[in-house]
Length: 439
Image 1 (cartoon, rainbow, N blue to C red):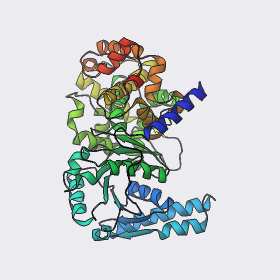
Image 2: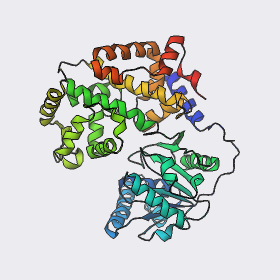
Image 3: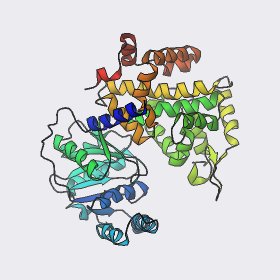
Image 4: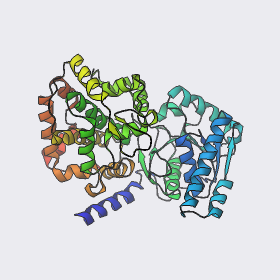
């Protein structure tokens, strides 16, 4: 079984490199100089990838202190690796010599590839791309690291939408191996192919995806996280939910992951994309209340958990049960004991159901691409092969039946969220698997 899954994932990685409609011998664009806009955690992590591959990188910031902080973060990263014996001092020096910082956006004029890693706000992104359109040389690839925003809209701020692409790195960007390569409506084939090749150059696994809210990874994560939050309103605890998910094989549960990323990040996404809530008054209630109280996760020492200086083990936040109980009372949600089985099914089956929708819409080319994204982007247990492979193993009809059961059990909430996707229903009825729908 383990060997079969290993072979499956290896084959899925190989298939992910093949993009329908793009010939294997297409001429690639030459990438020698890279610019990264934004010297925060994501921007510096992205820059390190290219420095490690021997490419010159220019880091752009608006303020001197932010720029110096980013350059120091990269320097410290290499010093730590030298200290641990993972890199020679000479190699660290060579990589740092490839790095330059600037406050002048005109210094990006000669870049072959520009990647913006600025605040996740459409107006900010469009302003950046409008300026890049004026500055960058013809043929430069203009990439956005957005995790949820519409790349077509970002591209519309330029007169060269064919050169615009999404390069969605996962945090920490110099560690996580996945890059979603987001093909906008007008992205040129040679841009997509160049980015796929470049992913391999920087030791990443590139997967081409289409444009929609959250692309593949974050679109599927949304119902998974939604159910985690709702389950706590219904009576589970963050610790119970996280225990169930880590026992299944994820490296961390949804609440620990939210605290690590920052609860304000998810709050900002919900605020920017109100349509994803579908009018559900319970949507994101727990997270929003914690954010309103200034409890943003690890960076403030409190979120779903409490993080004490010097302690490796977070504690349960005693305020969470009261927040959940108050939210449940206000919304008329009956609280009860939640089984581990229900937690696992509701979180995973909603994620898989969204994956079926993503596949049917062509946002992902094939089920294997989704599995690669989830194994390498969010740590779905590799021994299960990814969510779609796992779904096939336990049976698509079983998942459909469970979704219908929860739809009836959970009343209005169930009728809103637990509707099996048409593709899932079709395949379950026909006794077929997802690979029959892959391109």
